[in-house]
Image (cartoon, rainbow over all chains, first blue to last red; front, side, top):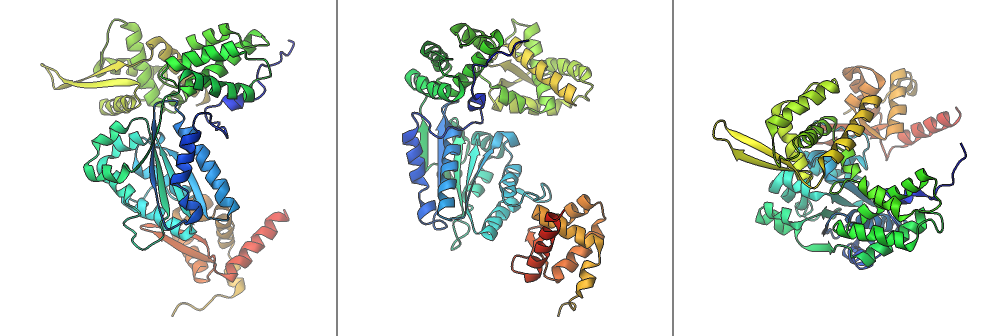
Length: 397
Length: 93
């Protein structure tokens, strides 16, 4: 088989984890973030700061924070200032304070035991470790909403007051809280909220011309010269713009369209490749989010998808109905099914990820009933994606 | 007053103590259970050896609430000498 030349020169530049050095249309926010933390370069240990970075999906919150983290780390290294930037996605730890803070400690003590202490102990341990290392740290808590939802006011209050409780000692820990929506802070009591809402940087949704610039930058980095014409970039920008100005969606679509072009043996990414790619992309949720789900969470979500695929006129499913599908999937996967309570926890978690909507109503005949509905994801697409992922897990297990 | 310092040959005559030192050198800091688990020895024996190495000033114990971890004693000349020995040994392999 003759080897066809790929349209990509470096497809890793389209990976979700790739952080570009320059972020088009976020220069102002980047400068603001640098200003908020400029004390780290001029008078470290004498100040600490808390900044909220907020904006919709795909507005560049994570990339902006990580980009800033890399640049301040390089600057502190040049000036021989002891400093660490750590970025933790709270949702990966189910919004639970203890493993999140454990992650922060393992930046300095990689073998620190994961068990054997309380959430309060671990906060003071982090400060002790920072003192031992005589360093300052910016801890970026990504998807902070999940921590707020899961832990509530007490934990957030303790977290944000860590420095104040160390009167007279060096100020070592600053935070960047990254969240989609400031509304989730309304769940906190007034004192916890007041410790948070000081410095807020809001990232507005990208407009179409901005998306064109972002995509053009990535095209230059990732594709061979001339492989992606302007009209194709324009089409992808239009699609990303209708998907709430989501740059991440646009970049994923660009990569996928390139893959279709390679599969066709084409020298260029045509508009048809984009159309094929968009028909195979799940709106509303990214593949990486699905991939991060645990085995039983995936099986539970597959059970929901199968229910709505079979009962396509139904808007809601009862948890008990989904449970039957889940039991069948467990049998297919040779797994022991989890309890009803555990399934309810999965439903709550998936609801916090905005994949499902959860409603708890009262039933006339028996106690409370839990109703589930799928938000913006077509059931057949979700089923296809999850079946593939589970097949892979079964194969690798 | 603490116990009298051990002779050099007494400190380094134990195979397990040497394995503990190499392990902690490579991983930075560890608690007793972790050392015991990684070296497949029992907790009590491991704990005793760690205490000997601490008493000799080679290791230091860091205490974080209930969690206790051991690492090389940063201010100790003995610790530095042992670290150099391990480096020289590993580089010559």
